[in-house]
Amino acid sequence: MTRQESQKIRYAVIGIGSIAQEAVLPAFEHAENSSLAAIVSGDEVKREELGRRYHCRTYSYERIDECLSAGEVDAIYITLPNHLHRQYAERAAHRGIHILCEKPLAPSEEDCRAIIKAAQNGGVKLMTAYRLHFEEANLEAVRICEAGDLGDVRIFQSVFCQQVEAGNVRLAQDSRHGGGPLYDMGVYCINAARYLFRAEPVEATAFRSEEGGKRFANSEEMMSVILRFPEDRLCAFTVSFGAASISRYVVVGTKGVMTADPAYDYSKALRLVISKNGEQEERTFLRRDQFAPELIYFSNCILNNRQPEPSGEEGLIDVQIVRAIYKALESGRAVAIETEHRRRRPGPIQEIDRPPVEEPELLHAKLPSGAKRKP
Image 1 (spheres, one colour):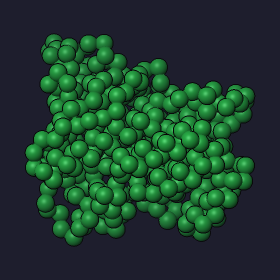
Image 2 (tube, helix red, strand yellow):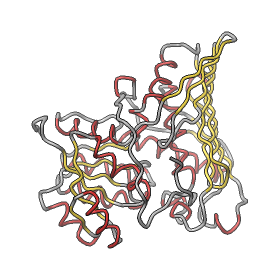
Image 3 (cartoon, rainbow, N blue to C red):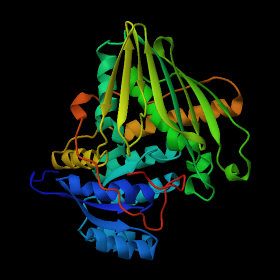
């Protein structure tokens, strides 16, 4: 597919929850090669108000086929709950519509492969929405590890937690449907370890908390995971829906230590601290729009007929690792991990810088904690 650079890729955003309203919809203002053509929601109030706010068409889920077939949309951005990703991705691919899908790509390997196959059969691009593959702080961390500034990188440790209030959709689904902190937050830790180690893990061990009460009747409250990588490198991380907010990873090499804190956030400045030879260097990376770069990059891939990185296969690998972790959890022993082989990984060349968005008032949606963002 070839298109003039002056043309914009027209998107329908499917699912208008908190992340879509807070970050995705406002991001189109900073994505010069992309436009918001439509939103799809089951909430009539959201459709009417947000359609007016963003001057775009609106559709209910019952009219999704009309949306995809009207000739007004080139791509979709799926921000739905994880268990719904496959059905909407397949419907879009069948109609020749490109697919940008939030992570995790789907709850199971079978679903991921079905999405990838549908995109191939439909001749459309598929990208898993790993926003940190375009973000300066994490790409600088990649450069530091690749350059050997820390020596031989041996250890990755991370803690990623938040308090999710009762009634939030994150607590409604069990792991079979892509629910729980491992799918929601653990994929960030897994993906970061993979792009910093530049390798895939070969073995997993896992533990979970059995506490939490009624709030966690469907979802785990907390999980801890150890992943063994080639050359006996180790990744250990803990994720929780019932602990104080933290977003942090530490990389330890033979010559130095690098800490990212916060590491995975999109609503605040990120920070790297490098400790080496008794000295410490601290770098702060100001808050940016992390969603416009995804749109810009994916639209460029469509316009120039290039395969995206991160691809559908990137999303599949993280889900393969997640499923192996659950097998280790259920068996009570270490489980071997078999994944696809990756040839492309994120690097500094992928950085795209756009200013932060003005966070809008959320309509019939709220953050997992129920709190409002601080300005």
